Image (cartoon, rainbow, N blue to C red; front, top):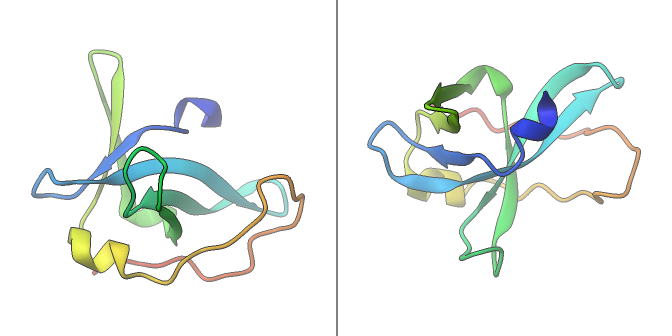
Length: 101
């Protein structure tokens, strides 16, 4: 379920904490088009959102705890273009997700 992904911590391959999954972007209400990640802040203060291609995100569950992994550096992800949206909006995501190298 999607609600179990919200709040999952996101790490890179060097096991550095990058942020957490804030939301999922759906296209036409049924196709996952992006993973919205909160990055660059501390406990929700001064953070911003980036959207990444779901194909670049790996979710792993160990002992009932989930973590997500993206192959990118912390600096590269925090400098990615900010994704802005209204959480209360029913509009579709129109930005192309950031795809880490």
